[in-house]
Image (cartoon, rainbow, N blue to C red; front, top):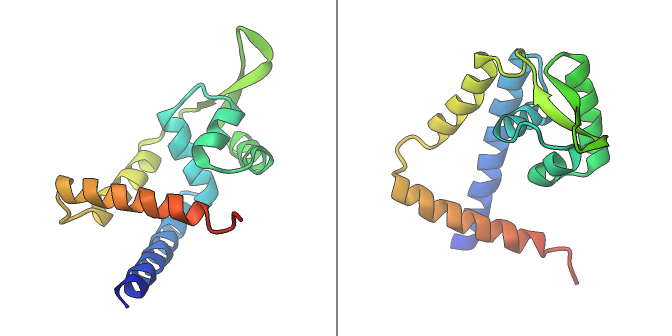
Length: 141
């Protein structure tokens, strides 16, 4: 019974986070997917599309559509790499680095972890990583 309640709490948490994230992202003129790309790229500017796709855990063609849209809207730009002209590195523009977008993700992190000590966060992170690993094996024979 406890495991059922835990899984339901995880699903409820995901729904609430998604609802809030969607609402805040929309206020910035973004979708959840595009806001995630900007947040990840802020941590790893100069990454290639393949590196960013791996970081986000999504397929490269899916990411390419997001990158194309974000580039068209002025949030990021592609630049050639000096050592390989075929590869393009991704960089945020001033618009992509805007304080409003950064504050948006920072506020979400702070609000959802309010009242949870650093020690509890560490235990929770380890447990959630294990749950994610277990979830990743659900469809494997």
